[in-house]
Length: 466
Picture 1: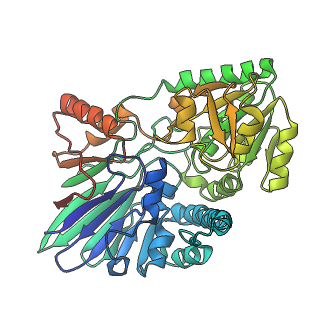
Picture 2 (picture 1 turned 180 degrees about the vertical axis):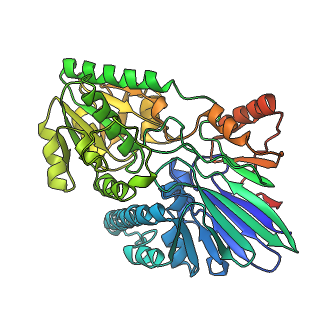
């Protein structure tokens, strides 16, 4: 009988990775994500894989976010030579994101090796390089939603729209072993039904085993319209206070949503005209990719300018993309009246740190946290009320007004997760993944009460029969 191993995003929200094995040696990996957050978790990215990459037949990728795709170049560098199956949009986005990640890996290793040389310590190698990433990208195999394809002998896969980000997929895997076929459904990251650009996650009805994410398993998001109202009030107050507004954001998904909302509020006449800086080369590239897949977006008529609606940057009157370091640094001349969207989404790196340095200590400034902040990240520390934070070798006071807007999450909330699960006709084996343990337990209780369904919480390394 085929086996499924739980290798990553088990009782935590990053490092998504699951391995399917059949009795005749076929091995297919679902996701190959990077761990993010605490230092010890990130250090795990350098550890060897718990399987031999050379023995894998294929990888099936749910979507492009780094916590699901970020170790693919390392996998290829370790000897994986099979196909990497993706949706068409994910194939474009993963190129953008992993080439950027490779650049970060090389620069981080170069920086660390400088002080290692001064300390007489041996040099380290980057986690992976641009060359590794380019080799990995050559192994992509794109597929349309609803297309049935054979990832490996006896393993058929179909992608369905997960509604999380452009190209995100619910992965249906039909595994034939010893003459019997069993169906595994992996939710990937399920989208928030209130997302302004994405369709609602596709409901599926047949499965033997379901892996369901649980990022927000402990709660529902705040009412969507109330969140938009709060954003409008924050922007109006920031205008009165005379400071800047900082928005740390993921380059893919969250950034496009924020630009949409800013454009919507402006065209409704509810916020003053302010300059909006998109200070993220990756997000700028993602906007261009979104424009290539207009037919996959779910933009309501009248919600954005009718002319050239597919180009996201046209939704705002004063929109400035700042791809170069020089353009980014020039933003610091703005002491008031600027809205600055920059990476990274959890404030653990990227250009947002430079804007923190110039704005976080100023009482007239506002910091908008528009989504989940994992334990151990700088963003989580700020949300939890830190009075000072250390960044760029300095300790900076947190005097800016901090706002958390949970209603803009790209993940399904608890009720949406339960609603999606409720469509399965029978009661397949249900395993909760991609969530912190306390949130998993809360969702487990809610599933039992509302659906009379006992979900299971696997331990890292657990292995089950499909």
